Image (tube, rainbow over all chains, first blue to last red; front, side):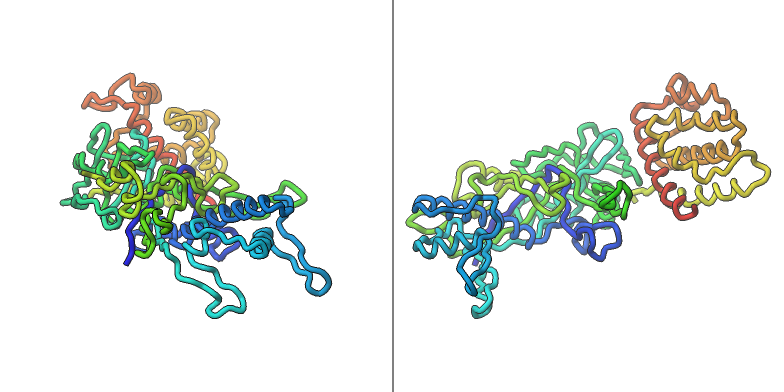
Length: 344
Length: 141
């Protein structure tokens, strides 16, 4: 059995999770898409990788601190690899491996609280049965869109969703409202100034039906406060999604001259997109860290800025991640009970 | 049906094919107009009025091929937006056109003038149309 939790991702910059340059995608690096709605997703493995990397860094800092306290001389932090042993036994270790080795000699054990291998499963090790892998205590599923901002002349942005995406959001967050969907060709909208038509670059929507309850479908503690919402058919979301993506054409210049070697493009989810992903935490994990039982607490706060996906060196990937749900409701105060009662 | 696509890619493809016809037509004066679309895409940054006005400059310079291409593109835009319920002026008389574009006089007998909002919509659609035309032009160049 599992404790239930979920995460809300809000993109603070364009978010690219998918193919990168050089892969077999032609010269447009596409983002990963959900096969039914054709809308952007972040695979669970990418989310897990980010959480793991975050905790590994915490463990490294902790090890350094412990060794320093034991008067061990630690290599400069810019040093990536350390050579140990002499003669034939000489080998090169990564900085972290070196720290682990020193800690072992000093009989220092890393607390589970900051041990990424404990929470997210141990990666395989050569020479061990089954590679020494373990089952993760915390499991992540893919993140799907809840609301996607689209340029709309006159508004100037509306956040779009469709019944299928809202259904997933409902299943994850236990929101109790019926799923808004277009009925008789009438599209539910919540607009600052109600209009009969919404124009986009490639088409327009008419037959709009004012539906104020739509605001209940925006995560409560979200930084983004969409006031212009529209729910379109599952079959229309793909077209609108393609129109909404952030696309950039880039060039690779030759090394010796300012001459274009090749062109390539990439797409990304635009900033202010809202995504949701479920988290399952093994029942054996305590919700509250009492009596030395260990609780999963990946960040100091439950909302944090995280980089996800690729191309972060050219301005992509900054997001705000909010953890919520049953598991977190029990561990902390009012912040979480609020997000639990979305729509109440 | 509530989602109504403008069908811009199809319109753009036809316009680019039309440019080839214009270029092949010995009756129309001027140099080749196929590559005018790059100028069109550039000019949308300056607004609808300048986009429409470019045809006058080409006629004055005896570049009828270019002028025809700009004019036909404008006509297509007018008909696309007409289908979306946005009225754009399309008069032969340059003075009347100018007044309608600037919102000085009504667009038609209903008394409606070109609003700021509709101008924004038209510009967004025109930008996208030009992007589509650039794509097709690349294929025929």
